[in-house]
Image (cartoon, rainbow, N blue to C red; front, side, top):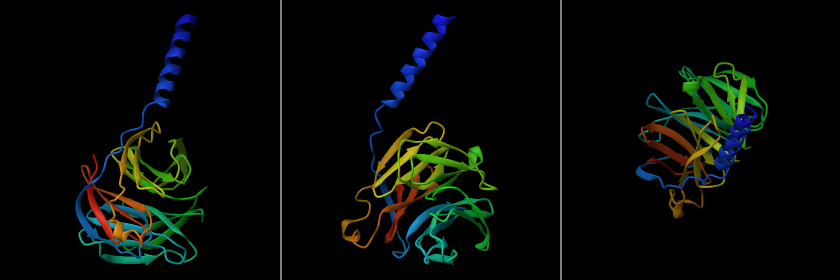
Length: 248
């Protein structure tokens, strides 16, 4: 029995070592299908498509908003300011409501989706960067700039757990089929993560997506919205364009 247990422990250690040293996925390039106008004054922090409506959360103190956009034209249909003292961050749709993070203010904002009326503020620990709904597991997933993803109850916003993913500066998030797509802040890199194991399962190299001539007045890539299948919308802070792309 002791020999069997020792063998099992050795096998587990070997598997763990192999997982730790596994080669990272080879980065792939997004295939651009369409270019759509985007408001170049929008400091994009969150982007999500739901029921044919594109929602965008923007940042900066005194300028942060929650917006409802036409996904075909990028035009704003409605926009509401968040409380002026707050710095808006990632957003996600949960049924009839929208959750919006704040950066270092320690509160999540819950909005009524139909009226864009602020319903309540809920405190949480740490910073808020990106947010998405992992519907299959009935939880929200939040990034905070560290190497951890945090799980929250989608109704109360109470934290329910976390996982280390070995990548820091994870910014805007998009949950799709149990996986998490994440912008890596200050880079043109997007990673796909398994929130159960923390493993990086795919990597996107989006360098050159925004033409060099438009880079001077733009900030970093930040904004992922799932359209259908392997199609997504990608944009960035102060970008003049949103790109409908295929990610394989």
